[in-house]
Image (cartoon, rainbow, N blue to C red; front, side):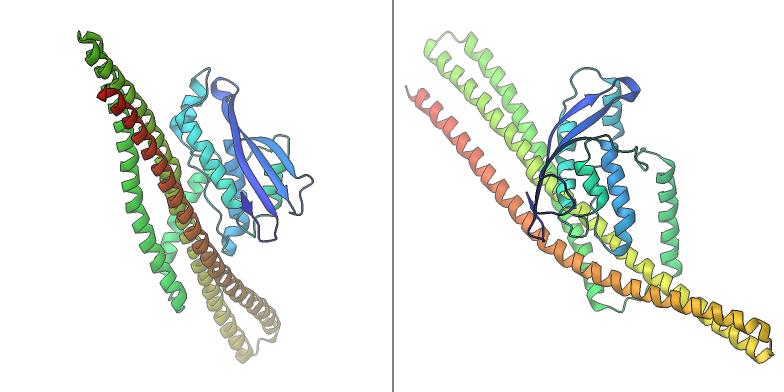
Length: 386
């Protein structure tokens, strides 16, 4: 559930998904339920709509184009998987899978993260996405290797050369420290994510090992001639089977509560770094315009000294336009700097709360699982004593 700063409330859930179409035209549609209270722009307080994955990608792209250059953090959608896409189009029948379950959860995280943004909560594209009952217009920027994706690659390369050729001399101590903190935090979270992934893998292996042990003990019990020992072995096999269920549940909880949560935080840091660069680019544009302004002033002075009155008027007009553009770019740079500061502080506060809830939830789930494990062994101990 998301509480909006306007004292409104907006809750988003991805309730279900289903496969639609067959063959090359097949896709997964996701059912989104939205509950709304005291948020302007919505005609009802409850909506249920179906959206395909490309709609999510299109929404993110629209919001990024409108807001990211202003310093607003727009979260990433889950990555588009060629493997999942191929399976969806080539398989028939049951569409449910672990990968689709995971994507469903990540899409829910994406939408909930969007509506935490004060600048995005009332955006018309987001409102249409959550409330329009019909199909949305086909979105651009959704192909795995679309032309726009290729253009983005070239744009990124061009931006990298721009940063090298025209580096920003950072004079703001706050931004200098913020850059360092983001880099350090990203490194720490990346290392932690690796350990969490190893933990999830270990839990899965342990669950599989207990299932195999259960089968082996069952075979041993069935071939045991001593009735009492056979009964004890059979109960031991049952205990191992129950433990396998507990460990499988722990593995799923590790993946959902820890792995996905920390991966989301890493993605938000990546977006934050993109926003930092939007500020650098704004500064570069401003400085470039200042250079143009200087040249136009020099040109105007030369025309005046040369007595070319017919050109002076045009030079003065060009100079006024350049001064206006330079002033606007300076204002834009100061505004994006202010917005990024606010976004950084807001995200840091939200990150602390998110990680706190994640760790508390994980520990509570772990405690519950360990309690179940203890109960299973205690029941077996009672049988083994007889």
